[in-house]
Length: 300
Image (cartoon, rainbow, N blue to C red; front, top):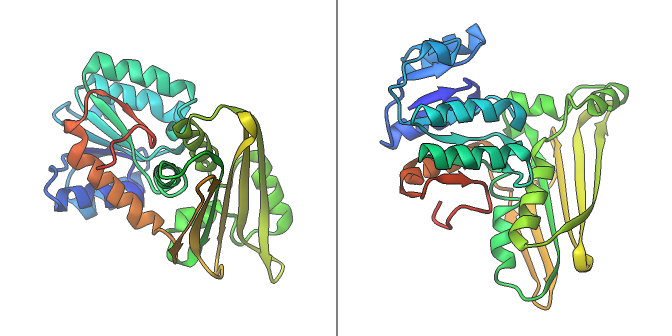
Protein backbone atom coordinates (compact mmCIF):
# COMPACT_ATOMS: atom_id res chain seq x y z
CA UNK A 1 0.00 0.00 0.00
CA UNK A 2 1.05 3.60 -0.63
CA UNK A 3 -0.24 6.83 0.91
CA UNK A 4 -0.35 10.13 -0.99
CA UNK A 5 -0.91 12.91 1.54
CA UNK A 6 0.54 12.52 5.04
CA UNK A 7 -2.14 14.37 7.00
CA UNK A 8 -3.89 12.86 10.00
CA UNK A 9 -6.74 11.31 8.00
CA UNK A 10 -4.41 9.58 5.53
CA UNK A 11 -2.03 8.33 8.24
CA UNK A 12 -4.89 7.02 10.36
CA UNK A 13 -6.45 5.28 7.37
CA UNK A 14 -3.37 3.44 6.13
CA UNK A 15 -2.27 2.55 9.68
CA UNK A 16 -5.71 1.08 10.44
CA UNK A 17 -5.68 -0.86 7.15
CA UNK A 18 -2.26 -2.27 8.06
CA UNK A 19 -3.46 -3.17 11.55
CA UNK A 20 -6.51 -4.90 10.02
CA UNK A 21 -4.27 -7.03 7.81
CA UNK A 22 -5.43 -5.47 4.55
CA UNK A 23 -1.89 -4.83 3.32
CA UNK A 24 1.55 -3.50 4.16
CA UNK A 25 2.53 0.16 3.67
CA UNK A 26 5.64 0.63 1.55
CA UNK A 27 5.79 4.39 0.95
CA UNK A 28 4.31 7.78 1.77
CA UNK A 29 4.32 10.77 -0.58
CA UNK A 30 3.98 14.37 0.61
CA UNK A 31 5.79 17.56 -0.49
CA UNK A 32 5.91 18.85 3.10
CA UNK A 33 9.15 17.74 4.86
CA UNK A 34 7.54 18.04 8.30
CA UNK A 35 4.67 15.78 7.23
CA UNK A 36 7.12 13.29 5.71
CA UNK A 37 9.14 13.13 8.93
CA UNK A 38 5.95 12.54 10.94
CA UNK A 39 4.86 9.78 8.55
CA UNK A 40 8.22 8.04 8.78
CA UNK A 41 8.03 8.18 12.58
CA UNK A 42 4.48 6.80 12.70
CA UNK A 43 4.75 4.10 10.03
CA UNK A 44 8.47 3.34 10.00
CA UNK A 45 8.62 3.41 6.20
CA UNK A 46 10.22 5.78 3.66
CA UNK A 47 8.46 9.03 2.82
CA UNK A 48 9.11 10.80 -0.47
CA UNK A 49 8.51 14.25 -1.86
CA UNK A 50 7.06 13.08 -5.19
CA UNK A 51 5.53 10.01 -6.82
CA UNK A 52 8.43 10.18 -9.29
CA UNK A 53 10.68 8.86 -6.51
CA UNK A 54 8.55 5.80 -5.73
CA UNK A 55 8.75 2.39 -7.39
CA UNK A 56 5.46 1.07 -8.81
CA UNK A 57 5.54 -1.94 -6.47
CA UNK A 58 2.18 -1.32 -4.77
CA UNK A 59 -1.35 -2.57 -5.37
CA UNK A 60 -3.45 -0.15 -3.33
CA UNK A 61 -3.14 3.63 -2.93
CA UNK A 62 -4.76 5.91 -0.36
CA UNK A 63 -5.09 9.50 -1.63
CA UNK A 64 -5.86 12.10 1.04
CA UNK A 65 -4.17 15.39 0.29
CA UNK A 66 -6.81 17.75 -1.14
CA UNK A 67 -10.56 18.33 -1.27
CA UNK A 68 -10.42 19.59 -4.86
CA UNK A 69 -11.24 17.23 -7.72
CA UNK A 70 -9.15 19.10 -10.28
CA UNK A 71 -6.04 18.67 -8.10
CA UNK A 72 -6.61 15.06 -7.06
CA UNK A 73 -7.93 13.51 -10.30
CA UNK A 74 -4.59 13.58 -12.24
CA UNK A 75 -2.83 11.87 -9.32
CA UNK A 76 -5.55 9.22 -9.11
CA UNK A 77 -5.31 8.63 -12.87
CA UNK A 78 -1.55 8.16 -12.61
CA UNK A 79 -1.93 5.66 -9.78
CA UNK A 80 -4.55 3.71 -11.74
CA UNK A 81 -2.26 3.58 -14.75
CA UNK A 82 0.50 2.16 -12.54
CA UNK A 83 -1.79 -0.77 -11.69
CA UNK A 84 -3.12 0.31 -8.29
CA UNK A 85 -6.64 0.42 -6.93
CA UNK A 86 -7.31 3.80 -5.28
CA UNK A 87 -9.23 4.92 -2.19
CA UNK A 88 -9.59 8.68 -1.86
CA UNK A 89 -11.13 11.06 0.65
CA UNK A 90 -11.35 13.92 -1.91
CA UNK A 91 -14.69 15.57 -1.19
CA UNK A 92 -15.37 17.00 -4.65
CA UNK A 93 -14.96 13.57 -6.28
CA UNK A 94 -18.09 12.49 -4.38
CA UNK A 95 -20.08 14.76 -6.70
CA UNK A 96 -21.28 12.57 -9.61
CA UNK A 97 -21.69 15.68 -11.81
CA UNK A 98 -18.01 16.69 -11.52
CA UNK A 99 -16.33 16.50 -14.91
CA UNK A 100 -13.31 14.75 -13.44
CA UNK A 101 -15.51 11.81 -12.40
CA UNK A 102 -16.36 10.87 -15.99
CA UNK A 103 -12.68 11.14 -16.94
CA UNK A 104 -11.71 8.79 -14.11
CA UNK A 105 -14.44 6.32 -15.05
CA UNK A 106 -12.75 5.94 -18.42
CA UNK A 107 -9.30 5.50 -16.85
CA UNK A 108 -10.69 2.83 -14.49
CA UNK A 109 -12.09 0.86 -17.41
CA UNK A 110 -8.84 1.09 -19.34
CA UNK A 111 -6.71 0.13 -16.33
CA UNK A 112 -9.05 -2.59 -15.05
CA UNK A 113 -8.85 -1.01 -11.59
CA UNK A 114 -11.25 0.72 -9.20
CA UNK A 115 -11.53 4.00 -7.33
CA UNK A 116 -13.62 4.32 -4.16
CA UNK A 117 -14.48 7.72 -2.67
CA UNK A 118 -14.59 7.05 1.09
CA UNK A 119 -15.41 9.50 3.83
CA UNK A 120 -17.88 10.47 6.55
CA UNK A 121 -19.22 13.51 4.75
CA UNK A 122 -19.43 13.33 1.85
CA UNK A 123 -19.61 9.59 1.55
CA UNK A 124 -21.87 8.51 4.37
CA UNK A 125 -23.90 10.49 6.88
CA UNK A 126 -25.35 13.28 4.67
CA UNK A 127 -25.78 11.36 1.42
CA UNK A 128 -25.44 7.57 1.57
CA UNK A 129 -27.44 7.04 4.78
CA UNK A 130 -30.37 9.31 3.83
CA UNK A 131 -30.46 7.73 0.36
CA UNK A 132 -30.76 4.25 1.89
CA UNK A 133 -33.47 5.44 4.31
CA UNK A 134 -35.42 7.06 1.47
CA UNK A 135 -35.37 3.67 -0.24
CA UNK A 136 -37.74 2.47 2.46
CA UNK A 137 -40.21 5.29 1.86
CA UNK A 138 -42.85 5.91 -0.82
CA UNK A 139 -43.33 9.03 -2.93
CA UNK A 140 -40.56 11.00 -1.21
CA UNK A 141 -40.93 14.75 -1.66
CA UNK A 142 -38.14 16.14 0.50
CA UNK A 143 -35.03 15.10 2.39
CA UNK A 144 -33.47 17.21 5.13
CA UNK A 145 -30.23 16.46 6.98
CA UNK A 146 -29.03 18.54 9.94
CA UNK A 147 -25.53 17.80 11.25
CA UNK A 148 -24.19 19.54 14.37
CA UNK A 149 -20.52 19.01 15.25
CA UNK A 150 -18.68 20.10 18.40
CA UNK A 151 -15.21 20.73 16.95
CA UNK A 152 -13.52 20.21 20.32
CA UNK A 153 -13.60 16.53 19.36
CA UNK A 154 -12.13 17.00 15.89
CA UNK A 155 -8.68 17.34 14.32
CA UNK A 156 -6.91 20.69 14.19
CA UNK A 157 -7.10 21.05 10.39
CA UNK A 158 -10.88 20.80 10.44
CA UNK A 159 -11.18 23.30 13.29
CA UNK A 160 -9.18 25.81 11.22
CA UNK A 161 -11.50 25.32 8.25
CA UNK A 162 -14.45 26.45 10.38
CA UNK A 163 -12.91 29.89 10.96
CA UNK A 164 -12.43 29.29 14.68
CA UNK A 165 -10.70 32.26 16.36
CA UNK A 166 -11.32 34.72 13.52
CA UNK A 167 -13.15 38.00 13.83
CA UNK A 168 -16.48 38.19 11.96
CA UNK A 169 -14.81 40.40 9.35
CA UNK A 170 -11.96 37.94 8.83
CA UNK A 171 -14.51 35.14 8.55
CA UNK A 172 -16.43 36.99 5.86
CA UNK A 173 -13.29 37.58 3.77
CA UNK A 174 -12.07 34.01 4.20
CA UNK A 175 -15.46 32.61 3.25
CA UNK A 176 -15.59 34.78 0.13
CA UNK A 177 -12.14 33.58 -0.97
CA UNK A 178 -12.99 29.91 -0.29
CA UNK A 179 -10.31 29.59 2.40
CA UNK A 180 -12.79 28.20 4.95
CA UNK A 181 -15.92 26.11 4.87
CA UNK A 182 -16.73 22.49 4.17
CA UNK A 183 -16.04 21.71 0.52
CA UNK A 184 -18.09 18.51 0.55
CA UNK A 185 -21.56 19.85 1.37
CA UNK A 186 -22.50 20.53 -2.25
CA UNK A 187 -20.99 17.19 -3.31
CA UNK A 188 -23.15 15.41 -0.70
CA UNK A 189 -26.31 17.16 -1.86
CA UNK A 190 -25.71 16.40 -5.53
CA UNK A 191 -24.80 12.78 -4.78
CA UNK A 192 -28.02 12.39 -2.80
CA UNK A 193 -30.08 13.94 -5.61
CA UNK A 194 -28.49 11.60 -8.16
CA UNK A 195 -29.08 8.60 -5.89
CA UNK A 196 -32.75 9.51 -5.61
CA UNK A 197 -32.99 10.05 -9.36
CA UNK A 198 -33.97 13.71 -8.93
CA UNK A 199 -32.96 16.34 -11.48
CA UNK A 200 -31.66 19.53 -9.82
CA UNK A 201 -33.07 22.80 -11.19
CA UNK A 202 -31.91 25.25 -8.51
CA UNK A 203 -29.15 25.55 -5.91
CA UNK A 204 -28.90 27.97 -2.96
CA UNK A 205 -25.79 28.08 -0.76
CA UNK A 206 -25.08 30.02 2.42
CA UNK A 207 -22.44 30.17 5.14
CA UNK A 208 -22.57 32.28 8.30
CA UNK A 209 -20.27 32.53 11.32
CA UNK A 210 -21.24 31.20 14.72
CA UNK A 211 -19.99 33.87 17.13
CA UNK A 212 -19.39 33.82 20.88
CA UNK A 213 -17.72 36.50 22.97
CA UNK A 214 -16.98 38.57 19.86
CA UNK A 215 -14.94 35.79 18.25
CA UNK A 216 -15.91 33.21 15.65
CA UNK A 217 -16.47 29.75 17.14
CA UNK A 218 -17.29 28.07 13.84
CA UNK A 219 -19.63 28.11 10.92
CA UNK A 220 -23.19 27.33 9.88
CA UNK A 221 -23.28 26.16 6.26
CA UNK A 222 -26.38 25.23 4.26
CA UNK A 223 -27.38 24.08 0.80
CA UNK A 224 -30.88 23.88 -0.64
CA UNK A 225 -31.55 22.00 -3.87
CA UNK A 226 -34.78 22.51 -5.77
CA UNK A 227 -35.53 19.48 -7.92
CA UNK A 228 -38.04 18.75 -10.65
CA UNK A 229 -41.56 17.95 -9.54
CA UNK A 230 -41.38 20.22 -6.49
CA UNK A 231 -38.97 17.94 -4.63
CA UNK A 232 -36.21 19.35 -2.46
CA UNK A 233 -33.06 18.50 -0.54
CA UNK A 234 -31.72 20.59 2.32
CA UNK A 235 -28.44 19.94 4.12
CA UNK A 236 -27.39 22.02 7.13
CA UNK A 237 -23.96 21.64 8.69
CA UNK A 238 -23.04 23.49 11.88
CA UNK A 239 -19.48 23.04 13.16
CA UNK A 240 -18.28 25.09 16.12
CA UNK A 241 -16.11 24.95 19.21
CA UNK A 242 -18.31 23.92 22.15
CA UNK A 243 -21.47 23.60 20.02
CA UNK A 244 -24.35 22.32 22.13
CA UNK A 245 -26.48 19.29 21.28
CA UNK A 246 -24.17 17.69 18.69
CA UNK A 247 -25.88 15.06 16.58
CA UNK A 248 -27.29 14.19 13.18
CA UNK A 249 -30.97 14.31 12.22
CA UNK A 250 -32.35 12.94 8.95
CA UNK A 251 -35.94 13.81 8.01
CA UNK A 252 -37.69 12.28 5.01
CA UNK A 253 -41.13 13.47 3.95
CA UNK A 254 -43.48 11.71 1.54
CA UNK A 255 -46.34 9.25 1.52
CA UNK A 256 -44.07 7.43 3.96
CA UNK A 257 -42.04 9.68 6.28
CA UNK A 258 -39.12 8.99 8.59
CA UNK A 259 -37.20 10.89 11.25
CA UNK A 260 -33.88 9.36 12.29
CA UNK A 261 -31.43 10.80 14.82
CA UNK A 262 -27.84 9.79 15.58
CA UNK A 263 -27.28 10.76 19.20
CA UNK A 264 -24.00 12.65 19.57
CA UNK A 265 -23.44 12.55 15.82
CA UNK A 266 -21.54 10.22 13.53
CA UNK A 267 -17.83 10.43 14.49
CA UNK A 268 -16.36 12.10 11.43
CA UNK A 269 -12.64 11.38 11.82
CA UNK A 270 -12.98 7.85 13.18
CA UNK A 271 -15.81 7.19 10.73
CA UNK A 272 -13.65 8.23 7.79
CA UNK A 273 -10.93 5.85 8.95
CA UNK A 274 -13.51 3.05 9.15
CA UNK A 275 -14.82 3.85 5.67
CA UNK A 276 -11.28 3.75 4.26
CA UNK A 277 -10.51 0.39 5.87
CA UNK A 278 -13.82 -1.17 4.81
CA UNK A 279 -13.26 0.03 1.24
CA UNK A 280 -9.72 -1.35 1.28
CA UNK A 281 -11.00 -4.76 2.37
CA UNK A 282 -13.48 -4.98 -0.50
CA UNK A 283 -12.10 -2.94 -3.40
CA UNK A 284 -10.62 -5.92 -5.26
CA UNK A 285 -14.03 -7.64 -5.20
CA UNK A 286 -15.63 -4.78 -7.15
CA UNK A 287 -15.93 -4.72 -10.91
CA UNK A 288 -13.39 -2.22 -12.29
CA UNK A 289 -14.85 1.27 -12.12
CA UNK A 290 -15.33 4.52 -10.23
CA UNK A 291 -17.44 4.28 -7.06
CA UNK A 292 -18.82 7.38 -5.37
CA UNK A 293 -21.17 7.35 -2.36
CA UNK A 294 -24.23 6.40 -4.43
CA UNK A 295 -22.46 3.71 -6.45
CA UNK A 296 -21.16 1.45 -3.70
CA UNK A 297 -22.78 -1.83 -2.68
CA UNK A 298 -24.45 -1.75 0.72
CA UNK A 299 -21.73 -4.00 2.19
CA UNK A 300 -19.03 -1.33 1.80
